[in-house]
Length: 101
Image 1 (tube, one colour):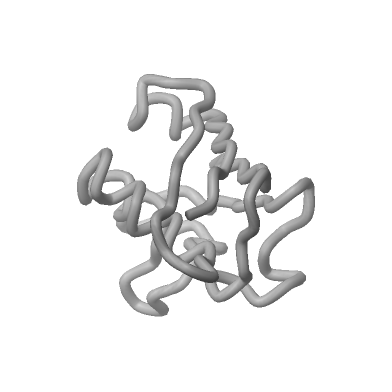
Image 2 (cartoon, helix red, strand yellow):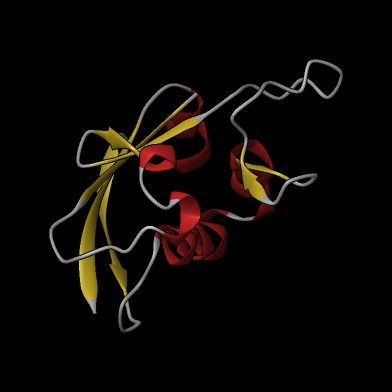
């Protein structure tokens, strides 16, 4: 089990009604994808629709102008996850994830 500090900015504060929280992931060797699954369990499909592009099954890096969805960013300890392994980036206890878009 790892504890991740989640920080929400912009539209993600509306989905969570929080600026930050600690999320426990009860899985060995969790990834950012596991964090996203936990967000869905807590906040429902709406947060996933804002975060994940259904065409690519990846973070919504480009805005969907026709669908009205904004581009979003996920930072892990201050670094964009796309510079690492994307959603497959491993997490460890005490990591900080920021979501904004």
